Amino acid sequence: MSKKARTMAMKAASKSRKAVGKPKVKLLSGGNPQIAKGDGDGPVQAYIAAMPEWKREIGEWLDAVIVRNVPTVKKAVKWNSPFYGVEGQGWFLSFHVFAKYVRVTWFKGTSLLPMPLGTSKVEGVRYLDIHEDDRDEQQLASWVKQAAKLPGWSGH
Image 1 (spheres, rainbow, N blue to C red):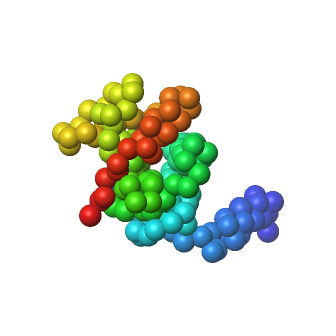
Image 2: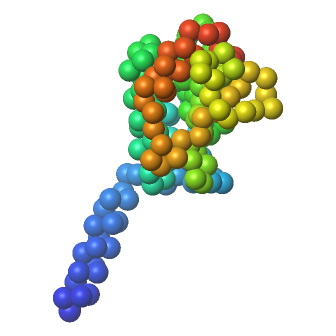
């Protein structure tokens, strides 16, 4: 076997070993992972792990900032998106992968100061679109703390 053939065979075997035990996740339009709905941190972490490219790092960052600022946060995956809320109050935010950004949905966004810029046709909802090199942790943390104190969306 030639050196080139041996190298190619080793790469293929390595790739095959890495794939074992990793369930294949379907990416929907814009690269949004299709994850089964479920309550708790497990489904949210599965969603984040399946986020493509640089968006996974944004998902990890969002999750960390939310947990740091609301340690008792309730998590779930619904409609192929992670949801964050407070027990007995409802959901205060969700996020979703799009081709060029990760969109954070603030369910009571019009009550946040300063108000997130992204408008919605749904009353009270505001959006924050986060691009690859576009992070303001101080502002995000402020909004997370504010949103967690508001009555949330029940999501029935």
